[in-house]
Image 1 (cartoon, rainbow, N blue to C red):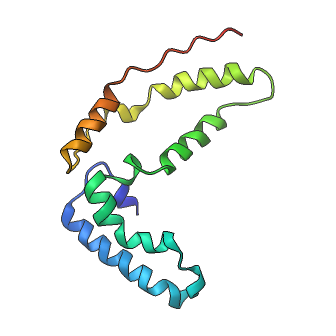
Image 2: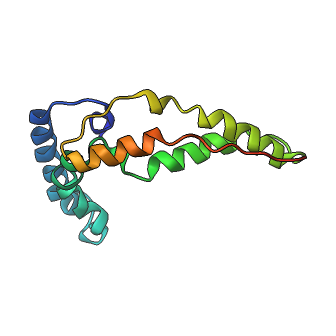
Image 3: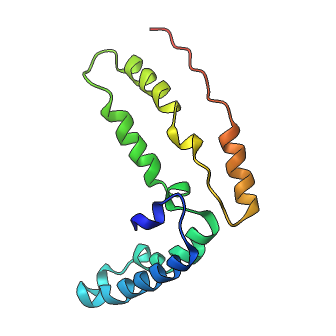
Amino acid sequence: MNYLNLYRYKYDKLNEIKKLLNSIVRDIPTLYSKEIVKINIHQLTHLIDCDIKLWGPIWTHNAFVYESMNGIFISHIHGTKKVPKSAINNLILLQNNPLKNIQIEFQNPNVTAFYEKLQSKKTVSIIAIF
């Protein structure tokens, strides 16, 4: 799964990963039980063709990046006093996101155009009085 988070990867390697994911999905009912096979497990069979090949690395279109950023954001707030000020200061720090400088190549030109449009937005200035 870490390979699917890289900024660049080889498409022929994706077919190999697809075979491994299909093998895992096929073996899960035997290794655990049929009850554990839910929609999320089944979605692994579509991960390469319907997500990665169309949209790029997982981090470009999956919520775990945002959940991770929330965890980072919250971990920088200490104490119980001046929480809003601390939150605003950390938000400003997080706006200097290093991901903005990464060049990503998408297979779909519409996705590329949309991504470039998102990256060209200026950061929002926040003015707060404390």
